[in-house]
Length: 265
Picture 1 (cartoon, rainbow, N blue to C red):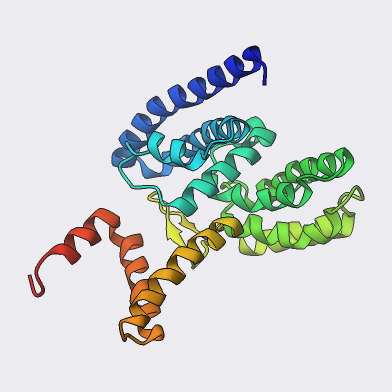
Picture 2: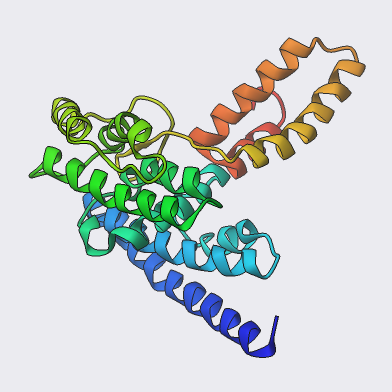
């Protein structure tokens, strides 16, 4: 990498980092005033994260460390899965531009599936996937009008369209009609699984397989240590999953403080 390219990457990363602070301040302020307005702010945060993450990857560094550090000033702690969702939503928002409107970033996340499927393939396939992102979003907006599309409605459109949008064939009129009709039936219906993003939206967790594999090795070692000490494996995994639910509900610091307190206090 030339010195000029390195300087350009550093400048891009600084711009992304610098843009996050005022957005975080605005998000914190809006959360205490008008929770419905926070969605569009998080879309802008997602865009900045997407830009900064791309620079970090190019530099061969862990983008998640930078992202977590940059977002630590948010009122609500951001979990690792949410970092991925924000980054993915940012990639989609970059394509959609002003068409995003006032939608929440969670509604953009399902569309990233199209980009992920096309990643590393021919330019023609990547172009078709990019066009499909715009087309499916337009159908979602039309179906949800006058409201903004929900994550669940967009996911249903993606699931209908993916079989006909892989490769360069593009969308079919029949698929588009069916997708729009199904979205109208389910518009503004919140998903019933996942985490709440603090703005009244429930997020469905989309976890990176590589992250699951890496975490699995560590978790497996921890489970093995307890089993070796005489605890049943099923009991250990049950306790760990219960702790995860507590952390999602109350935050890691709160749970750690509660567990550190003497029993019964």
